[in-house]
Image (cartoon, rainbow, N blue to C red; front, side, top):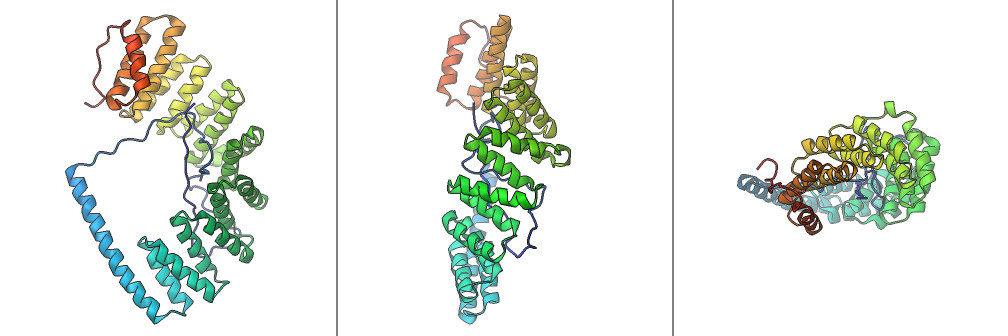
Length: 360
């Protein structure tokens, strides 16, 4: 079983938000870094090939950004000299530093502001965001706790604290924060989704199942990406519990909710294989290959399905189709030694020549 880890960026507006307001419902769910993904299988990341014109454009973009950073540092230094004791001006300067990617300077300015005005929410919000931008999650956790002491009902702050806790492997503490959010807002999708994924990571599958089922009670109200994520997570929990037939139904719903996602079709193919629905598995793999024709993993998975179909039917044509798919996978990514050995094992029983990669 291949697992995909989706690492979230700690989200939330830095500026003050109305206490109790949750992040936008249609935003992508943020999965914890330690959690297994809600997908059984996913194709490897696509290989990005830069053309010479693209490289030149990228180089020019970096040069412009470097120039902006230099100018920004000079301007910020002057601002600091002019208004070292004015919180509003310091926050403005810190915002500019964060906007141009100067995290250390932003942290310094936000920290100075919070020392001058310990209850300034904007300064603490900015400090937390700057700390997160540099992966200083332990520091961000302290800052979020300071914020919650001032705004205990702010779900955006609490949600970001929970994500930061999960990124530092404090899973029980993160779960407690998600649960507190849900006490005040039972329909907070991202909090419940993250709690389900987190419990799944801890091996607490009954709890994870309960959370996914609560999400899916109103699946028709969810954005397609959110519904697909919830159905996929539920499907994986069902697989872990040995309920393959129910998992097939869940993965079917995930693919229906997000038909443009190749991983959703691969998950459906896996579940279909587990229930003996080889025709559905082949069709799902073909759908994934149409979406991601240059993904070696897609073709490798399709070959596995054809091999199982050959074993079930004893039809040599399916073995030939398996070898053909594996050849395509190897043409895209030759660094698959185990797959190459598999091809060598079965090629002698087929008459199939090596195939060129799709699009070549």
